[in-house]
Image 1 (spheres, rainbow, N blue to C red):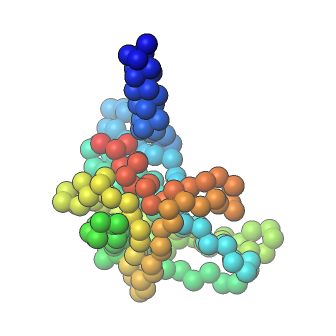
Image 2: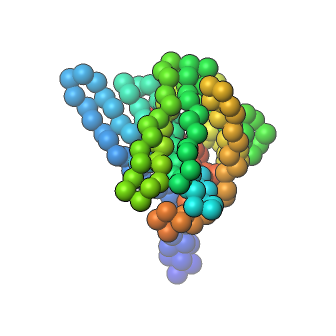
Length: 188
């Protein structure tokens, strides 16, 4: 009887600590090559005084090259300032273990698009694709990210990652601190 209880406990423990399956938005293999991309994940949300700022992240693997894409959506009744990405833009990720991981932007200027909706809001949508370096890729699997610093063409901004939050956007619970640890394996 003891053996059955121990065996049942082991199976339950394995299912509790098992990794979540990867959710892909795109997973294509054809004669040109392979491309897979994870679903976008809300990393940061700031809603204050009629202004909304959202940052989404996703991983992609293109013919063996891993990348990280950030997408910004800013919504305001006032003018939305453009922070552009260029070849010198970088993302610095401060890990909980004290290490800093740097991601390098691809050589492409990107300032986003400004769109006015029917309610009079200005919406700026901007995305940037960043490359990993071999020496920092492994560190992201080991420790949660607590801070993200983005160096734009003319400005630098810091975003503190929360352990967990419930988004006003969709009511879902997100865990941005452990996003890299839990999802970077999806592009290996």
